[in-house]
Image 1 (cartoon, rainbow, N blue to C red):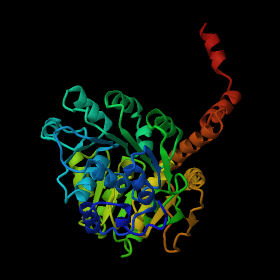
Image 2 (image 1 turned 60 degrees about the vertical axis):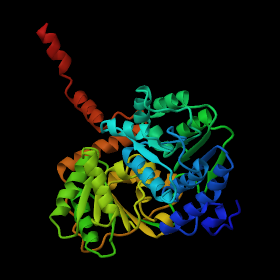
Image 3 (image 1 turned 135 degrees about the horizontal axis):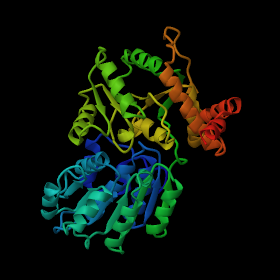
Length: 433
């Protein structure tokens, strides 16, 4: 498809879909949509690689809705697999928005809740099913998921599914669904495991790669601040959030403990409504918090990486990485919550001394340097606590071991020096004899 495509109507979408796209405020298709939609409509297997926030979901949902056409029978004709409940719900919500002027039916299937309502929904008849791999297998083994009418399989966030160990479940899915079908795989990164997966189930795929792998969208301005410790980070965070430019903010941490501490600290400040999302929160709490953030009812959402993938939340002004992610691909997914749909956004990352190691790896991954900004002069630099220094030392040892498997760690070296100075252990054993 020529790169001169400027409007969705040039992609041969039907009037119902064009009206739904217009209702969503979309006018100009993104590069991944321009390239993927015609290939999918032509029946090709497609492997799409594009940064998060570039419209991958619409790139496969819109042509899928055209191919399914209208409600028909009781058995689903398309299956979309995604790695998390949140992403499954997000995709199903997108399907509902784009298909609202049609009679097409879709349902979201995921774990963490009883299967009764989901089974009833399947029995009532569905055209498109969005599911986590585990829940699909559960319902199939119960005899509640008919597969013989499936014509299209979509794997979304394939790299995350590989990270989460879904490969055995995906292989089970491939064993039970019809062999004759169209296959679509979408991912933000092309890690080796994703290549292995694509070779197993894609047949002569057309590759759509609209940007170098693991790059951030051009609409995101990236900044980095060197902040020495937890206490200084949290006070600098409060300093930033006082500014009105931070209209809709996602704050990412690497642990639930840090997320809880930040949430409790910010609750005591007069900086607007705030919610928290991590894996210890109930499913309903997580969904309600994300929906409230989407609808603009709250200003700040604190989260671990459970919310870094797939969630399409419009008009996020800033993403703040309170901690640097140790899974370096997650940096791309975190900052991709802003700068979506061609709108500008900003990511800000706080980095202590031990996290510089991960920043160097991230910069190598995204093929660019992140702009370093000096801390404002009026930010107080707090002393690093003994516990935090110990934690940093352990992390530093871990990094050294990753680079040099022969490195035994600072504690090991210290222990060796002590034993050389005080070689009394064997002598005491002899005396006992």
